[in-house]
Length: 310
Image 1 (cartoon, rainbow, N blue to C red):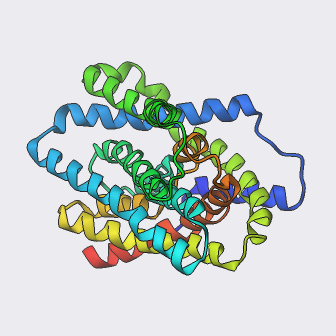
Image 2 (image 1 turned 180 degrees about the horizontal axis):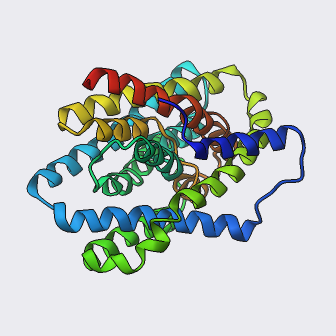
Image 3 (image 1 turned 180 degrees about the vertical axis):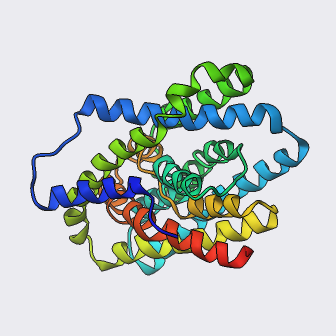
């Protein structure tokens, strides 16, 4: 399965940064693009949820939450016992890799839609459900070492950070409005791919800029940032097959398992674990895992799952 056109914008941003070209999306526009993507994905999922809510979806949601709790428990011992990172940094990075990247999910959606592959329309609900559990597990892993700081501020940040609030808010609005959401869908629906392209242009630039700082951390973290997505993708595929999702749904669950957060989790970890090295986790997720998933991972998961389900 070929790359979607939006990935070309990511590559353009990375090449521009490597050539030191003066291309940079203004901070205000980048923030607007982020808000748009979160709300657009949430609204679309909420509208679907209004007509697809069922007891079966409840059980699927519980299984997805359990999946979100499992991933950081897999990542932590790899980082702490094999990689040799201290408990605080290991817990912080594990939380990033147990949570999800909305941008990675958006790229997978764009690829499926470009190839006219169907998927469960309520999938944004699963994205929202996977934002928080890994943060809780990461804090628990750190708490075992007595490193948790300011629990009240942590709970506030987890519940009200931008990613969780806008995604969940979009889902609730879409669920409440149902078919009435059609009045705003020309904006949130038809412009989605164009906005995603601009967002990825900036993400390519940022990822290329952060890669050099990650090299100084050693080869293990770079290897982890590639291997952990593959582990998550295999686990996500197994979960999706168990839940009897469509081929497109299997691709999306594999993508969510492979992705790593660089918005919601960093904000929570900055409050909860001030001793953690934020450059380590953000650089790994943004400079290695995100490009790997966008350029290699999603097409790979799609091709393998397509061959499995055909």
